[in-house]
Length: 108
Image (tube, rainbow, N blue to C red; front, side, top):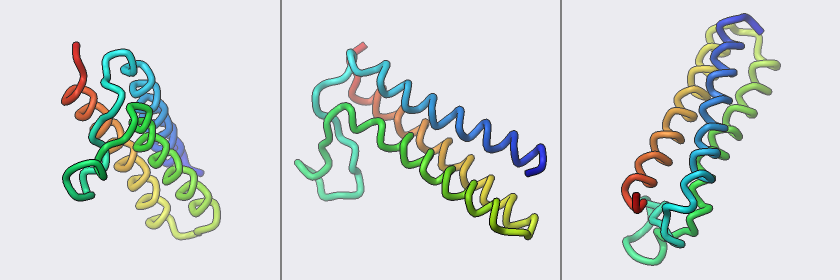
């Protein structure tokens, strides 16, 4: 793996882990239930436990892992860059989602 791809994956991994750590650190400021599943109908379906905030970070790490495996298989350099960028974007969205929900429902 080339150095720019390696740096992108390290940054993506760091953001994903930071998102998970941020969710755990905010547990004392959060109510027991939070709205997490905004794509579902309004009401009980959107509610998750406050530990559910780990899900966006975990999904971003899952995407990162799948993309890393695909990069090892694929030979085309452009597709490798696209997969690395997609992992970085997923990690960025995970931390933004976690941050927004914490500051939306948190009591600081």
